[in-house]
Image 1: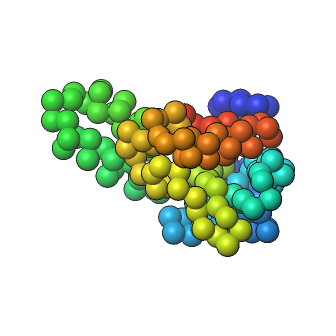
Image 2: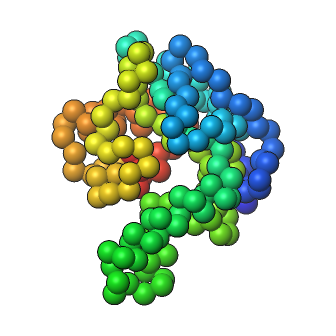
Length: 177
């Protein structure tokens, strides 16, 4: 069990105190990666409040919320396999550690998604167009970390995203913008 900002995180297939995200005029759900919109009530309330910290012409777009252990494994395996192919000299420990930078291991604790306490989110315009953030959602490259060397426009967008969320106590995972 982990406690972050007074939210108790304990991984289980059906975390407690869950609700379902619903679309609003400032919060869109994008089903291209997943369609399980369960999240902890506290996260939902903070996310909805964070929309008030965005310029009027921008919104949040959510790509993923709750994630089962099986879904976590589905994300883990291709990244692990790609890194293994690209780095044949890495030992098992290094391979595991580097894969875990991009995708939480499906064993052990799992991820904040499995606890109903994490979301994959971006900025979008009111017509549901996601803004360019330098990489696509769940694209794991050297440009994916929040502080990666990206253009000024993309840097400003990443800063706006993380700042709006932080004002409501939501924390950015630094290896993903």
